[in-house]
Image 1 (cartoon, rainbow, N blue to C red):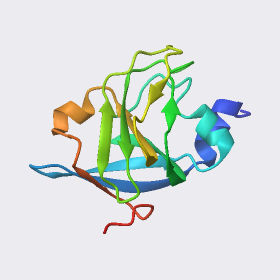
Image 2: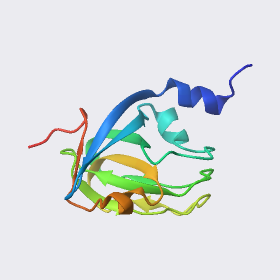
Image 3: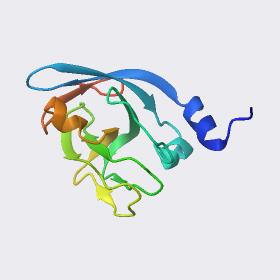
Image 4: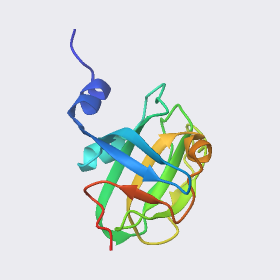
Length: 139
């Protein structure tokens, strides 16, 4: 069977783990890392499910205003905007599938973590909590 472009984009992404540290616990996620412009453009589009212990990390390098949208994304997501130190700056919870509405970081960040919709609330994730991964440089 020949893999289509969606399957190929998914297969080519680097995989790793990321830990979110909340006030009450540590939560580890299996993540895909969208490193290239093409991977960032595709993101989680066309996926019909995302396990609660999985996510996708979009690293952007220098701190900047980052905007996302939900075009061609079939499932609700929690978008977690992260600073260079891995601090949660803002969470856009349960985004609306298939929406063209622009979702902004509302401040300079270096990465976005997408989780299944509702996961951030379930684990008690809040602004000021921390993500641990090699791309973040704690102070």
